[in-house]
Image (tube, rainbow, N blue to C red; front, side, top):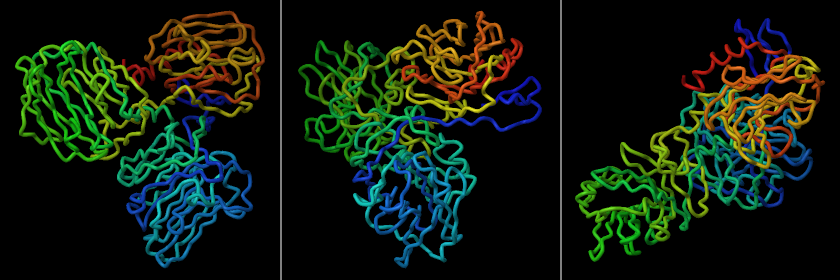
Length: 634
């Protein structure tokens, strides 16, 4: 929570603007976690993961919250390779990391109990570098234990799979886990701290992206698969564990995660736009897709369709069930046999890019390649006109794909991407998704060959330094005396991406001084259902102009001892008389919600600031001018 004066010195909530002071740090409550019941809940990882791990230099990262306050008896394993490898265990009153070395013996590193906070979130990290003979443990970014490794030369992983939440069904963990990662390198202390202090980071600064071998955010929210976001495809199988919401820092934000969720069509889903009818001239198309089952018959990837004449043009996997592992581009013609150009050798869960050019006037395909490889065949498009648009993942309501379509592109004209919910790049032809496709975590664009979305989906949020909230996430700043202003003046300020979602209330709270926004002993800046910005304090309710959904706006609410004022983008918009009330309270200060469960903010919030005085109009304008290039690009 930082603020700046006209002479570039911090104005802290304590009122001291003579020298920098530590800011009030917020805890982020965002996303989801898996809850393990302490009986038999577990995530089982594929054995391929085990064989990919370094035996000499490795880091394990997990966020852990125990349901138990003490662990004096039965052993609980947060994760384990069964009889060999690495284990994190709460065992007989102590916390241990264990690893099995090449001589079939066990080593252990005890983690001081005093550094672990039971029933709260703890980021736990262990790094081991047998080349340097070091083994370390960290909690919440701080080293808490270390040991030499007795000149061992290798970790002996068990041939059995890694399990999270217990050792198989034994030694079951009772609590919550999220954000599990394994790196094939021993992170430095600075890199461990980097992950803790910047929970949106997938890989810390200075670490090669290929070192990340596993990343389970555990934020899917449903289903029995914990998807690997590292791009290595090491997805885990969930048995028994259930999802919970609103986990605390340090975790990656779920709304950031949503940027990297793709719809996975299950054989009954599709996306379509009936108004896309532009099938004239010569156009080049690209579609990026996979299938989960190459043996399944008649899986339509895309379809141009004329509903009246039952004519069309499509790309289909395993056409008529006689071409397992074959992709064919096919024209549908009245009274004419099917023509096709095809490629064989498709495999399950492999992404392919099909590129093809159609001369619609001549009703012919002039070129077609799959991952750059041409086919010898040719096909007439046989589609003079289209009156029913473009379908992805099915032909009208039949021939459904079991797999993922990452994007469909009309080169140089328009593009539909899965990550956007198949909204068109031009904004003219947004698709409608039918069915109930599962949303899965896609690779993060961290390394060449693993990026299926074409962009690092964290980059936009990271550049702006914003909280990206999903309507079930928020941040808290613990109350202290410096944030109790009594009946005095104060200011609330933030940059926000304008949004208002009806979740049972017309108010979406941006941030404020804690408690219920409509109560008299607090203050909030908000949006309402009309996309007006609002500053609310006791009897004063100042309302700003109607803003445009999705635009960034600089919002400032001021109480000067007599009036409430609201500024939007540097301009004073409304002033209202207000009766001063004592707002010294013990409530935590909330960013992205108030204490009601219906007033969550669902979009980005940046630079929330609290001042212990009323900013002047000149200071508000200066603050807006100093940051508008970041958020408005103007």
